[in-house]
Length: 240
Image 1: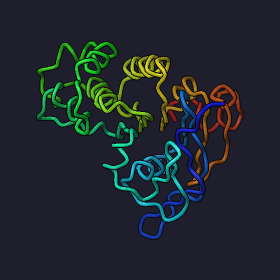
Image 2: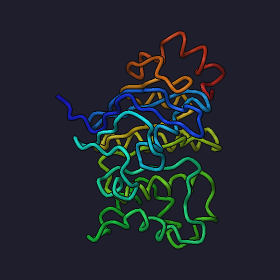
Image 3: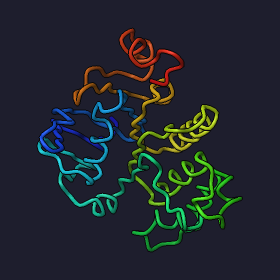
Image 4: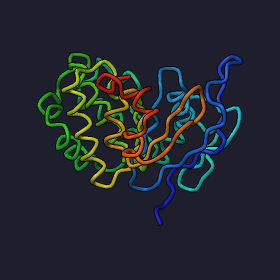
């Protein structure tokens, strides 16, 4: 039986009286890619931000590696091995690529060389540009850097928020290929993604969020073939 890495129970999140997440429950098991898909404003990013401690839940529970982390500080959550690639990348534009990667390992005090080599294996472009300022990279390269920075924290769970946002389809395909490679090395991934087509193709399991509630769940393959999902999210090219 697979070990449960992350368990969300009846999670509720509000902003200024508006309920963004209305009592959702799901789990992510060891070695899985799980994706949450849904339209803009459905509650996907609010869920991720609450899990990572950036937003406080008004109800429910978040359990990570068997420990209740509901309401804990984001730094403490990162120290437990839960890393996030944020929406909009959020790299440090004035730091070099190498410095940005080292920021991802700020809670570590061991040798980083092996993990730097791993990141450069996944993203050779970053090695070529390791002394370049992060802000001078293309959008796709910055997204690679954001993923690489999270990997430097040796995550037990890697959460990714809207990887495809603002990127050309060919760049998105390349990044999703790398996610598959990272996953095949044993990584556990929770993916929030508006590009439902891409997300469902890589996911072991998936959940559809609408208006802060989970309305559908199944394997990635099952949801790709679901008529409701097809009409709502997989229309022209699956970029809904």
